[in-house]
Each structure stands twice: as C-alpha cells, then as structure tokens.
Amino acid sequence: MCQLHLVHTLLTVACVCTIVCAVQVSVEEYIIFNLKQMGKVDEEMLLLLRDQFRALDRDGSGSLDREDISLLERAAREHDGAEKS
Image 1 (cartoon, rainbow, N blue to C red):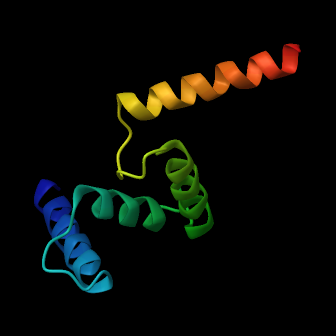
Image 2 (cartoon, rainbow, N blue to C red):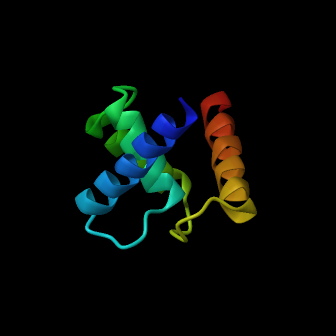
Image 3 (tube, rainbow, N blue to C red):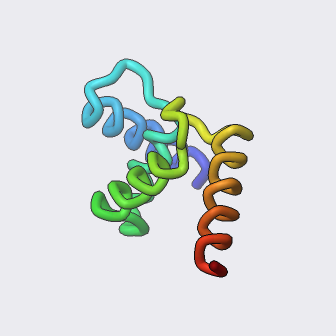
C-alpha cells in the first residue's frame, strides 16, 4: 500500500509540473493542486484568499511581517476611534 501511495504522489508531482510548466514545484503549488483535486478549494476561493492576502500585505513585500501587522493594528485603532466619535 505504501508503494502505491508513493506512485500516486509521484504522478501528482508530474501533473503539477506539467500544469504549471515548471521544472520545480513549490510546496504551495503542490498543496494547492492537491486541495483542488480533492475538491476542498476552487479557483474562486483561491482568488479570494489571494486578494485578502494582498490587502493584508500593506507594504506589498509579498509576505506578512511585523510592519504589516503594526499598520493593520494602527488602522484598526483609528477605525475604532472614528466609530466612537
């Protein structure tokens, strides 16, 4: 059974490589491909999550860091203060 799982995994990686036209597959690409194959996520949900991430990534660096969190916290405090006024 373990060998069958390995063969399936290798075929999955080959499919991902073919679909993304890549020589390498990142962990994110592998996970997204498998989640889509399992019907756990669709392209619409991925687009929504990417949009949410971009909104949270205040400095546009491509990752969420302490500065992004600080900017979000400051915006939330300002928003709360404006609602109380």
